[in-house]
Length: 174
Image (tube, rainbow, N blue to C red):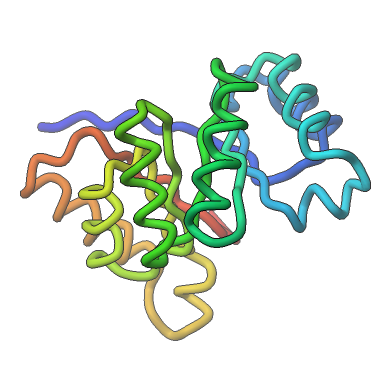
């Protein structure tokens, strides 16, 4: 029987909430995005620094723009936060190009907006540390999000993909 390690990530830029739940000893990382950070009214890099100072060393920091802009920003963030940065990119042709480049440079990458096993395969091939299937959004569109996680897990097991982990996102219920 294969054993799997479950990690729990918070999806927020609210550092007080992060501090509260990190104190439980159950939180392994945080994912953020520009919208969440804008809602906090804070500078993104101050938020990342605060999260790192809380003790978390796996922070998905989303980059935006064309592939060159995302690469440049990803390298800058990974250089500024070398002990905690995981660069988050969308599962688009540009995002996968960024993932391939950054992962070659030993930067951790989280490929988000995964809605199919095929996208998860492409992200793994591009070198992603994480793929983030949107379970809740898949459920909203009359597909079963947990089934998608199962399919991706099955494909990764069959193909012996061990480097890429599945980070279930947009989970709305138990």
